[in-house]
Length: 171
Image (tube, rainbow, N blue to C red):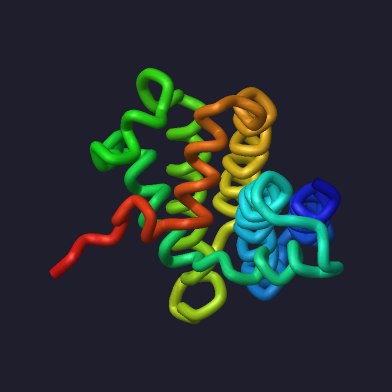
């Protein structure tokens, strides 16, 4: 979990570097970095559980296969409690509050990352960015609670293999 934690620490350093009036570039990078901390927390956890270590670097190649858009769709399902029947039977009981929190944070931060990286009309405040970083910290804490549970495995599998559960709506 070194990279995800390092990214979260970096987001905090970006935010705290300029005490009075941080530049927009620094605030934007902090939001983007916080999002990627959560992204890599989830993709590296899935990778550790699913990818073989041999041949060398096969696991790293698998990690590159994660699709942020598909992950967002999966997270919307978990956040809203609308898992398809073919996946619901794998989930032990209801979707846990920690799963919902992680999923909501992923969806929210992905949207904010996109705005921070591409929408130059948006002006970020230090407080908004601090709140976003705190949400990611809460998601990390939630992952520490459920990360080794069978339900976490269901979530990670859904994130890694979104088409398996027919997550995307068909038009």
